[in-house]
Image (tube, rainbow, N blue to C red; front, side, top):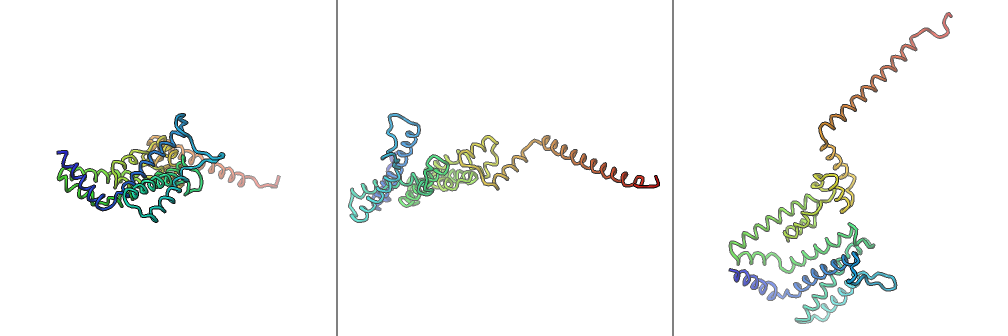
Length: 288
């Protein structure tokens, strides 16, 4: 039973990757993903001050970002790949080094977008979004949808049920991420539903429809993660919070407001009455 799926995957790889000459693209994508995972782990270890892990590279007090090494790798090995047009296995070697350079560069996408170091701020999350988009596009170019169709046909009904279940699961995760105002994660959910579950489980953006169901404490956590919502969204959230107040509290507020209005009306009536009596009294400078 297990031999059939393995043989099917092997045949799909042979036909869709090897025979199609897409091994360099595959190696570049794998190198891209592995390098991104490694560099993110490295930066977290450096930030936590782990002693056994080497720190940041500095030259005469200047911190050299890994973005610099990524750009150099892209320039050098991208140029060599165009000029030399090497055969296998050197073509795959250049593809791997190109993937490493792309990962190092896009991991600091927010830096060359904002022209300042925002790696650990909420603006720095744009780097992760850029890596996710690049990985998805690379996978689509490499595999396309033909691989999944062929695989489902080969493993018969069981695999078709699994693929359909994953597809519906991906649509569900895409809907949740859309309600949480996460457009990048919507795309991820449609292509990689299991990965899209990460975005669905994390906090919603403060200006999303999903955040309107949050308590004040949870909404504060969302604002700390993503930044405060816009003025329009903030007013909508306040309106929702006001509507969720208890009926007794709303009734008490209305009663107090009504009593204050009545008190002001009585005070105005007394002032008008006093003024009328003063003006209608004995004339000034009379016969006395």
